[in-house]
Amino acid sequence: MLLEVRNLTKSFGGFVAVANVDLDIREGEVRGIIGPNGSGKSTLFNLISGVYKPDAGARVTFDGTDITGHESHAIARRGIARTFQMLRIFQGMSVIENMLVGHHAMIRYGTAAAVIGARKVWHEERRVRAEMLEMLAFIGLADYADMPAGELSGGQRRLLALGRAMAAKPKLLMLDEPGAGLSPTNVDVLMEAVRALQQRFGLTVIIIEHILKLVMETCGTVSVLEHGEKIAEGTPAQIKDDHRVIEAYLGKEMRDDQVRAYLRSA
Ligand SMILES: Nc1ncnc2c1ncn2[C@@H]1O[C@H](COP(=O)(O)OP(=O)(O)OP(=O)(O)O)[C@@H](O)[C@H]1O
Ligand SMILES: [Mg+2]
Image (cartoon, rainbow, N blue to C red; front, top):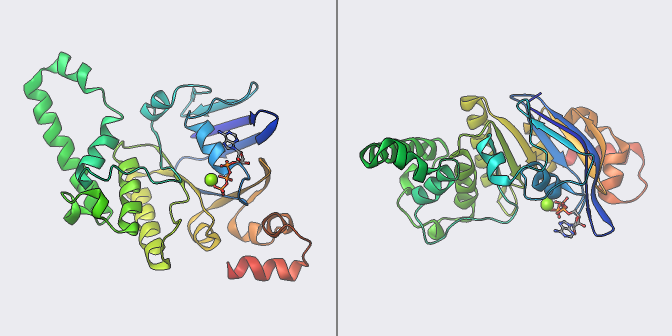
């Protein structure tokens, strides 16, 4: 397994946001995480990426290394990149500069400069710039490289958030509601970019998403959270037939045929 999560729990005061979650993510898979508002999806990402420290008893292993409780920058350097539910684009900076920020998060240039000298650093910068331009081409933003990020459309900003996470060349990419606020067309463009990146770089991807259709089309396995607990896991087809899943969403008793109708139309 690329990522193994065991007994992951996080309480805020007396409130348990994530409760005893186990998760196994295979290298190369695209995993979906779904669940109603407040079910602990973003908190799960915050725990895996080191934004929050889990409660005692948890173990998170990534690529064979125990990363439980490590700092977020150390976890990022090991190859886990993520996007945030709230966009964190530097509006005043150009598209390519935003990409370079994503890349620099990985590399300590101060140390590099001391060891290899300023001239080589300049060459290194040029090489990285070329690499970032190639990545922008991959997500369809190469023509906008020098445009201020604040002038991009909503859909383009989401693509840039994806590109910036990819700039660090991660092994595992975690996307928190990448389709939020996008038109159906832009959602398709974004998911196409995710699939292309996944195939090109052999990426492993975890996607939190409210748009069920998107998860169902893209993910091999879907895990479902409710009140911080993992209540179901399986292929999209299995999840579509899971009564607890739809009840979690709608919070009421439904007949099986109503459940299926809902999930298939989603
Ligand atoms: N830093 C925090 N302090 C206190 N409570 C928090 C904190 N972060 C999250 N929570 C609570 O934990 C619960 C889970 O929140 P989380 O953001 O993980 O849900 P989510 O599944 O991502 O929801 P959404 O679909 O709305 O994004 C919520 O009740 C939230 O209020
Ligand atoms: Mg969330």
